[in-house]
Amino acid sequence: MRKVLVFTAVVELGTGAALIADPAIVVRLLLGSDLAGVGAVAARCFGVALVALALACWPDRPSAGNSRGAFRGMLAYNALIALYLLELGTVGRMAGMLLWPAAILHALVALVLLWTARSPRTS
Image 1 (cartoon, rainbow, N blue to C red):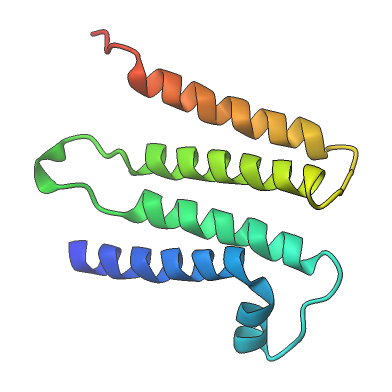
Image 2 (spheres, rainbow, N blue to C red):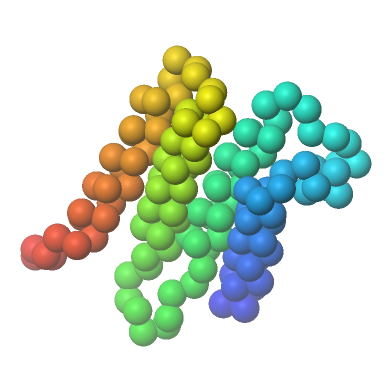
C-alpha cells in the first residue's frame, strides 16, 4: 500500500506542479485543446489542490503514529492558494469581489494551522 501511495502522490505532485507552472501545455497534452479566458487561473488553482492532495496522501513513516497527511495537505493548499490569489490581485490585476476576502481567509487558515502545530500538546 505504501508504494502505491508514494507513486500516486508523486504523479499528482508532478501534475499539480505542471499545472501551476504552465497550465496551457498540460491542458493541450491532456485534452488536445487550447486554454482560453480565465481557464489558466482555474487550472492553476486545480494544480494547487493537486499538490495539496499529493502531500496529504504521502504516507507517514510506519513509526510516526498519528497521520499528519491531512495537516500537510491543508497547510500546503491554504498557503499556496493564498499566495496565488495574492499574485492574481497584485501582479495579474484581477479584482473580483471575493478575491481579497478569499486570499485573506486562506492565509489566516494557513497561519492558524501553523500556530496549532507549534502549540504545546495538552492531554
